[in-house]
Every structure is written in structure tokens, then in C-alpha cells.
Length: 334
Image (cartoon, rainbow, N blue to C red):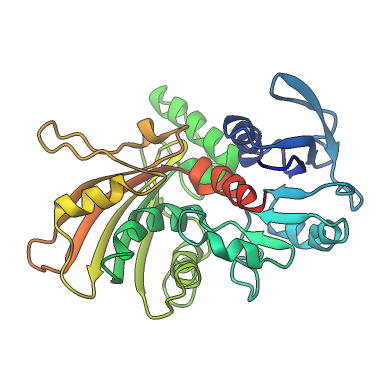
């Protein structure tokens, strides 16, 4: 029987914060008391949880007294500022930002893949980047039996990765485009409507942007395989909340057959297969939105290399890419 715990949600009014509440309710997480925390400007707002209205409080150093688990989606700066306060209160921080992901000694966890790492925490557990989670949910079910040595991945990332503001800008720019009204983007570097562009994270000296480097380094940490080759290209597309990824896996030996790959996916928790060649039906961001599973399809061999298999994966960025994964980590602790 799961013990009831006191939970705090930091960044409760943000896009991921709202989903934290929904996921806690949908998973019937054993919440004893729930505290909602946000900035001073959001304090006083009311949010519903299990039919009850809760007041959002301003997050302060003493906000975590009596809390067991603190779910954070307030940005890297605030995670770093409040980590010590969370620990001093005796709570475990599960952080959705990039603040602690690559810090030595801080577990980086996808519960279906490396749940044992969560129990090695020293007060903080990091939630991986959304693109990394969705990619590895499509790689790991095969990698367990057929070791993968190289991944080439191209992402088609939704606006939700940039928060509510980016989602709103996509909606507003699309309306303006259809009405032939001039639109000046404020959140993203280019006009989003009917457009796609290289991921707007900072470009690095390597020629890869921050998002792409996260996918490389986080994969090495989660799988404990520094030698695995990961080559990403991350692109923003005009989709609201579900990321899609085209993934090419090169195996150390021969690739699994399409039939076995499909069976391995179907047996893996959190993965659903949509791969109907006869009707040309495969995963789409629309049907993945607001669902818990990562969907996999377009399962096929490389036409020239027997040890390469290609797939297409789609998952909700706000759920499995963020809030759901974090609450699943919390489940490992109770």
C-alpha cells in the first residue's frame, strides 16, 4: 500500500505545473496535502484539484515545511535557488529544469528505463529533457535485447516546449497569417505560423544547439553508455503540445526483424504501436496530445544496411516529456 505524502508544486500556474495537477489526479497519486507555489504575481489565483479549489501561494524559502516531495517546474534559476531550502525541510526535489541533469551524483531518471537510479538520490532527482525522454522510450525497448551503438535523430518539436507563451504565439500568429494581418513575434525568433525553424536554444561552438547537446549527454548518463553515438537535429514545428521524432538506430549486430521490434514495443510499458501500412496510419501529434503513451510507428529496415532500423515516435511534451515522467519518478519514492 502506498503511503500518503505531502506534495508541493513549484511553478503551479505554468504549462507543466497545470499538468502536474492533472497527472497527480489521473494516476491517483497518494496525496495527503497539496501546496501550490508560484511567483508573487500568480499568488492568490485558485486552481482545482480533485474538485477542490486550492489557493496558489507565493514561493518562499519556508514554503516547504512539512512537504515530502516537491515537484519543480519553475525554471533553472529558481530550482538552484530553492534546492537547499527543499532539502532543509526534509523534502525530495524532482526537478523538471536543466539545472541538475548533468550534475554528478544527481539521478537522471526515466522510470521505465532506469528506475533504480531514483533510489540513489541525495535529495534531488532530475527529470530529463522532453526530447531525450521520447527518443529513449523508442530506443530502449529494442536496445535491451539488441544493443544500439548509434542513433541519428531528427525532432519535430511542439510549441509547448517553450511554455504557454510560445503556444499562445503559435495560435496568434496563425490567426494573423490567415487574416493577412502583419504579426511580429515576441517569444520566438521567427514567425511561427505555417513555419518551422531550427530549435531556438543557444548555438554551441560544436555547431549543435543546446537542445541537441542535451540529447547526447543525457542519453549517455541515463543509459550509462558514454560510447553511444547520438547525432540529433532539433527543429520547432507549428504543433501545440506533442513532439515527434524520426529515429534511425544502428545496432552492434543485426537489427531485429520488424515483427520482433513491434512485439518488443507492444510489451514495453508506456509505449503504444501505431504502424498500419495497409491504411497508411502512423503516429501523429494530434492523437498523442493529452495521452500518457509514447507512440511508435513507421518501423522499417534501412534499405542498404542490415543493422539499421528506422522508426517514428510521438509523445506529449507536457506529459511524458515533463509532468507525467516527474510524477512517475515520485511514484518510485512512495
